[in-house]
Image (cartoon, rainbow, N blue to C red; front, side, top):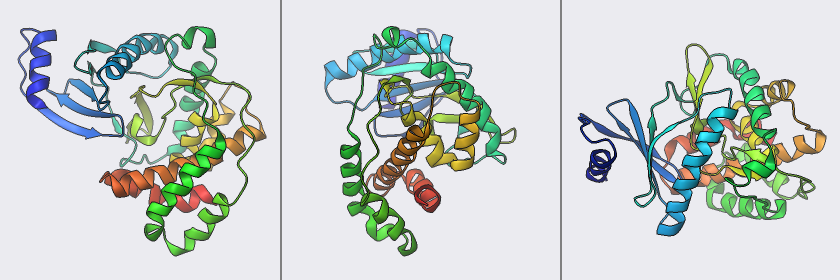
Length: 285
């Protein structure tokens, strides 16, 4: 893979001297490398060439639009190689919030509220040219969560199992009425922070951006930063978000935590496992 990245850089940035290429990590959709501590080169894990090319093309175009919308820094492409399935952008400052907790997480709430307000108020008719509409029934969310729980139940502390099983036994909330433009994967792994300043320095990985339920974005704030930061974020959020939205956000948060726990335990991604277990009781309480 590293030699492939060297060849990409030689093709797209001829004359650049490459001193180092380091693997940063990988998620469900992508693997990321750092070049000379200056560039991030991210490769898609999609195996279908046509789908991979479309994903890279769409994300590069999307990021150009998002850069104008977002009050927080986002990646701006240096090059996109749709055939090879790679996107390169200048490295943003900061470290991923996952594994790097900030001293004052409540300070993240107002910037997140403003960021989500800008995203969720973007014209849907324009954004759906770049982001697909996504509608996944809440019953299917719960069924997926039940499957994930069966995979990980022996790793869930005994004291928390009753909370999880009570949740899985309930009827899912009512379906959302309308969708907005969402990041759609706003977990701690995609929020870059200055740990000392308790400040957000960037929002990365827009692969899953979609027109969907706004509660999907707020849910991962609930999951990864807790109910207090979630409520403070809503205090600076300009969109309409009622009690039904809160119920869906908590529902998505719990389902996605089980998904992360299963991914962390079966896929070898320890940071997801540690984060999910650390937040399990708080999220399901």
